[in-house]
Length: 561
Image: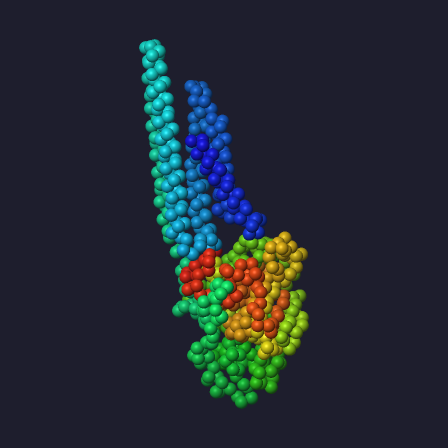
């Protein structure tokens, strides 16, 4: 019994040690005990050590008055035993949940994982039952031997022998009951756990996949996860997508040129409405009346191209809502979820980096933020986000779905402007082939960048083709939920690409470079793990990630669990 407990404790210690080693390897050591699973695993180890200490100091089974001490010890022994079993089961449940939630189950490994855990529990149950039986057989043999010795002592010991025999029978019944109860608990736990494992991965999915019926919007889907994935196919919306512009274009005065379809749908309205309407052709500015407050002409065919009203609501909230971009019938994800469940390695490796990112609030403020634009553009240089960009490009709200490669998704109302509008502002040359985005690089702001300088290719860098950057859906966000971006969500400027996996949507962009070379630019994850994070990374349920099946996703609405 003592040996089995030592073995179980040693396994628990090795489990915690391997978790620590894995966390150190991944750079997650500081987040270790934010995991419920590792915390419970540590408690299992502590319970095992307490049980060994309890067994080592076991009082002798003496007659009264020392017997109450022995009884108290037995109660403590069993309480610790039951607690250890409960914690072990809890560790298995939380382990399965976290492995499924984080995608650590390899594609196709579900059956083997289920069988391994079921086999482990069966082995534990058998070990407990066999151990208890062996102990009882040994005690029974010792009891018979003691009874024989007592009988040879004569009749004067008969009364004591009867009392001793009755006590032993009572103790034997207790031991059988304890063994039976322990085995029953273990069997029930094994059955429940096996059933849970069998269905848990399926419960993480649900909802409507991007690019499928009911998802809303236009989300092109091409096979793209692996490093060898092919280039995306043409991403042109169907002709009916802009059918509502026809009447507006026909009725427009000759002096006011309704913008071509590839310039439409970006939030401002000719009749000074606070949002887009079909009456004004779904455009994002007024090119005819330079006196209106929302005057912001971007029509390349208009003589007023490039003129803007100084009173434009570029950085004021609420911003106009563009009704053409909706995640219906999905529900919007609560801000409390999106602000505490995201990946931003510059501030930590857990999903909740709110506190860490908050220390950089002043650094990530839009008022003082500058964006460097370089490469194949007519107007390279340093652009002030507010004065040079937002004052000339109208901000609007679009509801997009954000899909992580880890198979969870959120629906967020982003406030920002089309990436194509920024490209027009800086004058991207026709020779440009790729757009490269870089986040900030400052070890005084990001302690992680300093601590892991040799382990990660800082600054975070992502890229896409110029053709993709011109897609209407490509969006630069400066806010969310009708408010400025929080630091942990990529303040003050981030990329949002709803048809690609989330790691492509780089946060806190400090530099954009338009590259003329035909060579595919390097990316942060492309350098770290090119076999799992390909360049194109378009959402495609038919192409699994090596660690996460993409056939289902877990939409987050009111909670991240």
